[in-house]
Image (cartoon, rainbow, N blue to C red):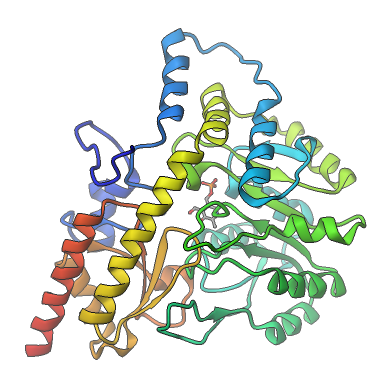
Length: 401
Ligand SMILES: Cc1ncc(COP(=O)(O)O)c(C=O)c1O
């Protein structure tokens, strides 16, 4: 049984999440538990470690011939976990999801062209659009905030259509959505797809969080909708990686999956021409091991997350009135709104740091106000519980001030 309660900190490391210079620059102190960057504070699944150990034990790192399993393993995984039938020949290996996305955006658009994303959203989308000198267009999600165990975020289709009418070329979809935690339903995706087809917009579907599903939520890939259409499609569905699922951010590669044969051929040639369509032995074999033997570990990890989420939800309801948690359907991020807490955004920020909680400020994700924070809960529960208790004390003290 994996031990998710304890983090091994006995070794020297350079993890960004714990890096003192990073913590200092974000929080002004190193005395915070890092609940910001979206990776895990857990030991990875044993089969992944065993496979990496096997490779290291060989003591050689020659050019490696990695077999077809590197695509057949995720193909079986998607079938097992999501009942999604993929064709192993439609994968393209890429250095990671963001590098693949950046390349695709540059290939499909010219400088100045409009690229749309739904905000609040993972901040690197904005960065990669801006740094390619494309024009960022945003389609804000609507938040019907609710406290009944449901996530209140939904898409604004009227606004999306308006933006598409104004000449958007590419839309970057995030499913499941980081940071608000929605796992988009088939009918929502269908509407996006119909609008995209109507206005000749290409969708790039980032599905890196597909496996992190909480409380029986089911994942629908855009690929399954394209398969139903049974016609050539210009959409790039999906971009994925074992990184988020198995805590392999430091070693994972990513992949592009394109259903349409001609389009697949085009992007395969593009990546090949840049020598980017191969991983390295460590990442490739770790990927195969994770997708082949990682089910049990992932199930246990998800159960751990659900238990932590239940505790956090109850604590917030009882002890932190005015704080709204958008119940995540997927991802290990929780999205907290302190707007009704009665404190200023600055007071909240100070209270979080004083409570030793290093959360990501909502502004990073282009949320519309400073009261939102994202917390990564892929971490041992006890320190998170301590953090929330300290937060309560900090806020009570501020109320008395
Ligand atoms: C939605 C989303 N896409 C992509 C990434 C990063 O992917 P990669 O490290 O493979 O570039 C993240 C990491 O947080 C993410 O949340």
